[in-house]
Amino acid sequence: MKFFDANVLWGNWQFQGVFMQPPEKLESALTIRNINRALIRMPDAAVCPDIEKCNSMLFEAFNKNKQLIPVPTINPKQADWQIQIEKFKSPFVNLYPGYHGYSLQSKEACELAEVICAKGKTILITIRLEDPRASNQYCRFPEVPVEDVKNFIEKFPMLKVIALNISFAEMKKLAQYKYKNFYMDIAYAEILNTLERIISLIPHEQVLFGSNTPLFYTEAASAKITKSVCREEVKENIAYNNLSRIITL
Image 1 (spheres, rainbow, N blue to C red):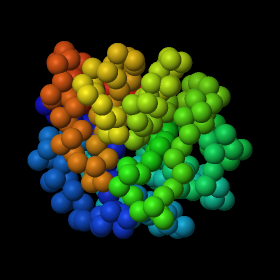
Image 2: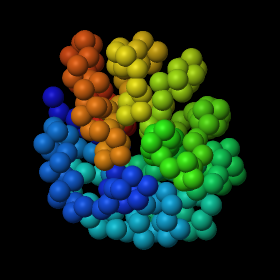
Image 3: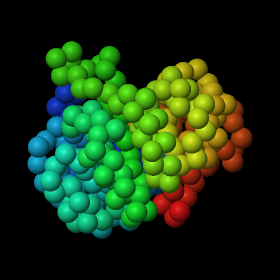
Image 4: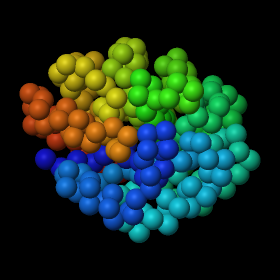
């Protein structure tokens, strides 16, 4: 089975001893695990004040790679965020609200959402980068509240939004509202019979494969699909097709 990963990181995350590797090494590691395509973002951009430098490094490394798609991180609190959206061309934009210190309900976030929606792009909201149970207690960042995500989606119903590293409990809270343009990845959803439980709440067309490689184990994410007893068509859609459709919408 082939995979299109919505949630891959390239760069440095000192809090877990993860450091930048050559792009070709990452591509090789993904290929071995049958990940043929992936959205790539930089964890450095969550904590580095010079986000433009992070985006430049990311695009220099992957912009010519048709399989690994670089996703720029945008901080709407910075004055040049619209310039960066124009400079770093991608169907996607990544947000780190908890790390950059703003709410999705803020004026800045709403202005960004309006621009992204008008351009037909998709927003990735990184709920968290790592499991707080494995993080240093003195280096923990706020996670994005479910209520913020809910209000954000309702304010911009035409905007395509992907929540990355969302827990099963958070999925459950949001599933009841049956949003049409909202997608979630499975990287942080840890529960027995993960896939079966998720699609009992959410249409499988809105569920995406995501691994949060290398901060989480890649194989743990793929096993949620390959070991599932769901129909093959459903597994193939979640593993690859659903994210492909978002790009072509």
